[in-house]
Amino acid sequence: MLGFLKGDPKKKLQKAYEDKLAKALHAQRNGDLRTHGTLMEEAEKIYAEIQALEKREQ
Image (cartoon, rainbow, N blue to C red):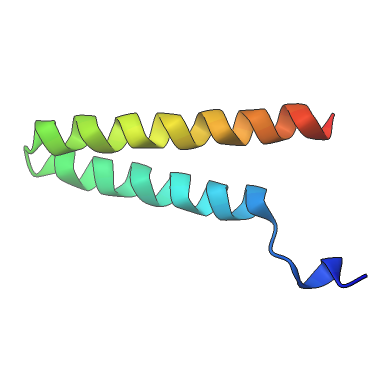
């Protein structure tokens, strides 16, 4: 009944994914490749979750 009050999980994941990518880019530009790799790995996990949500919606 009050489903409209719940946040969209896909939107939340998309925002987190974009934030991780931005942080990874910043780390790469600063020469911190270890942090860049870690952040990209986390971003890939979030992207996989987004893909799983999209599959469930279809």
